Length: 496
Ligand SMILES: *Cc1c(COP(=O)(O)O)cnc(C)c1O
Image (cartoon, rainbow, N blue to C red):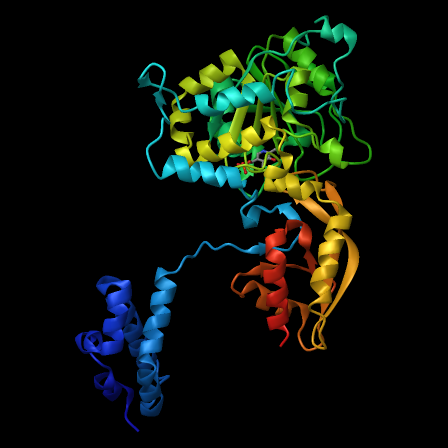
């Protein structure tokens, strides 16, 4: 047997390899540069294995015999996509790890038609002069957030009273008519909060309840964003109880803003107290301070109609008299990733002039997707927005699809049963925002649930399932009906 240094000469040289007909065929398909890189990577790997003493001359001969397959695989990996579509069978509608909201078909069409050619992104077609990119969606937000809007038929929510008669006449500082609301778009809600705080409160104090100093998804923490904005956090109350008097006592000459943060991803129950939004509105009016609400989820759709009472809508906040509302485009709104700031014209105008706005602005793809998504709301086409359609699916529709699917997969190897369960709205909506569903529970004796989950995840297309109590659970609420058949075929192949 040769010592490993003696094995190196057995390896083909790069030029020799590139002249081989199999490799020449790859060059014709995938190009010289990529194929050469793949050959180099495969040879380097073999040299490493020789150096590590993993190959004797027999093993090396086998590896060299398979070198064309290795090059083909290497090319496939290098030229293949890393970002892939997956089948979401978790039942979490706005799954942050799975890209949050799937886009409406109209949004995809509008992205394609405007982005693959030139567009009037910043060009006013009436005047022939330079225009603003935010006009395309501002007009739609105005409509959706105005009184005659097609949005929520709000009758109040936890912490929000519908304006009473005296408030409607303006007696307590709550506007008698809805103020004009303008909206700007930035990259995400984290950027929206940072831009709003920096514009409204840099160098001053912002009053926030201790029960609202939230962390969203690891790197977004209210105290940290506040520090970055140049404003000083003035905490009031306690974790579980904050009263309006706590805010009142904290107001001083340095106060620039009152901030309410929606508890998107947790709940405080038991001995708790939080002032009504309308009390904060009245306090803000009394001290001539702006009131901002970081809503996060930002529904433009009344979730009460599907039995969810814990998620305030953007219109609820505007109606109540909040001056600035920040929310995400890809949570309950069901559109592209974006941060929306809706509020009083003069305050939003200040944000528009802040140089951070230029740094945080979004591209034409986002505007196209957002415009199409908002138009679906204007047309009341709530089924056109996939996240809204999934939220509105009834348990019986899901059951019917699940029954059809399992009637075709039951084999000796895989056992599927239907059980009652809950889908989650997810994406920073309250943990209690759940919808009744029917789950397909898979049990298979030869594979553990984790092994089965791995097989599903590494399939093409990957299927992401829930694993609970030693079972795989599939929720068709988040599976597109057109994917039912693909899923059935995958399940049939996974249990040969
Ligand atoms: C989700 C959320 C954010 C962050 O929004 P992104 O769009 O993910 O940047 C901020 N605040 C609240 C209350 C949220 O729910």
